Amino acid sequence: MVKVDWEAHLPVMHEFWSGILLGPSDYRGNPMRKHFLLSEKTDMGEREFARWLDLFNATVDAHFSGNKAEEAKVRAGNLAQLMLHKIRAEGEQTRRVPK
Image 1 (tube, rainbow, N blue to C red):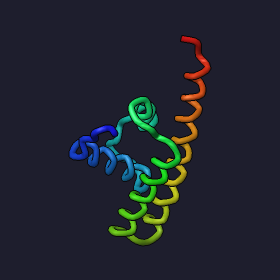
Image 2: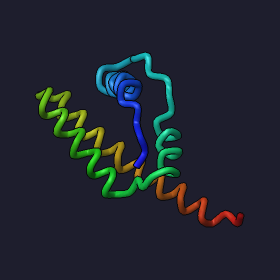
Image 3: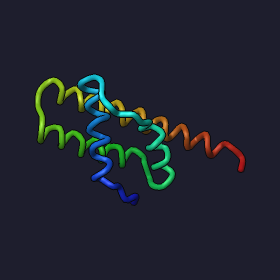
């Protein structure tokens, strides 16, 4: 298990999702790259993405309602699928490269 500095990470996540759902934001980053690096340190498969999505959806449901809340959950599901696909593809590519 990887230790996450949530005090530092939550504001970044807020900025990221604000930009996705509400328009321009100050988020400057590459979440795919960060998650590739994370996947080198810990398992990031279907189980982990499903757990993240469950937590994300529960948090949205606890604090928000309406069209944007539903949009957030749909986009999170799409993002989770995309990241899982890319992490798997990256892993396949890495395994094919001779060392």
